[in-house]
Image (cartoon, rainbow, N blue to C red; front, side):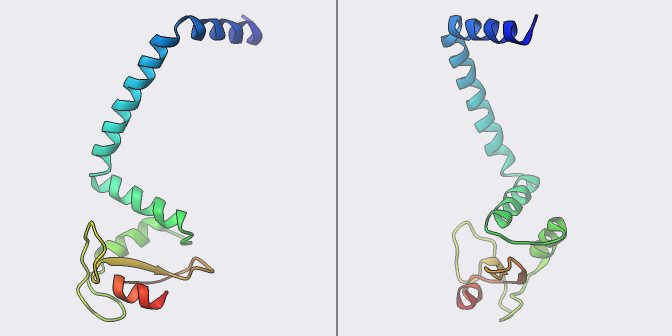
Amino acid sequence: MTPEERREYNRKYREKNREKLKEYDKKRYEERKKYQKEYNQTPAGKKSHRIRNWKFIGVIHDNFDELYERYLNTELCELCNIKLTEDKVNTKTTRCLDHDHNTGEVRNIVCNSCNIKRG
């Protein structure tokens, strides 16, 4: 079968089975959503999500795995020495990765309060 014939066959199949394919896509979407929700609760999921966010906001680093380990193991703010917390909602003591917004270079791991003051 030539590529053109294959495309035409696929097009006709999709037209003929539109509802069936729609239902299949809906089922796969729900399964993927459920899996993603479960995965995001695992340590690997949390790590992946955090690193993806760092890259999205422009953080530049040679080794994000090493940076993530440092982030997790830092217990005190590197500026004011307050004990850092990991909360769902940002508080004054929530752990933050401080970086230069112009260069993307990581400066410190600090509390939310120091991060806000530093800008």
